[in-house]
Length: 149
Image (cartoon, rainbow, N blue to C red; front, side, top):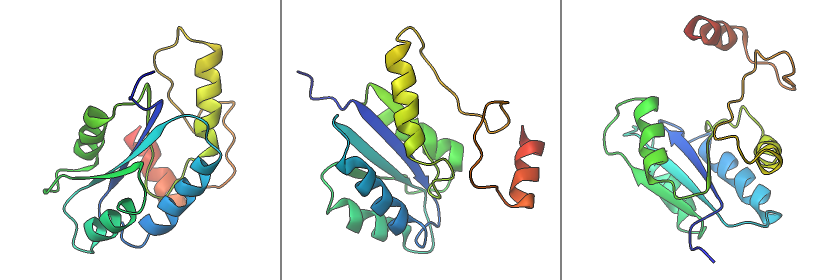
């Protein structure tokens, strides 16, 4: 049996002191019923609001949570890449600290992968015709996302 986790979740965090505690609590609750090994990598970009200290405090109480201190602020892409490079799971996800995609979707993706083992990559897309939008984003965030896409 491998010592590597089945699942890794990468959470980039920049100035997320207010959002991180409830998010990590939600993750802890989600994993209580999880039957596979896992790790949660919280990648902290240099923040001015105590994000690193809060993340480290929470991670010290959770054996499967780990903080990666990037020590600089180079942007979300850099934080995601840092976490992906350190992730050891057979399956690796990245999720924003606001959990705009519910954790239940992780289970749905894993079921899809297990049913279709030849697939290497799955990408969620809110604009897909079969997407289930249960919580609408604010107009500004939705518009900025469309412009970015």
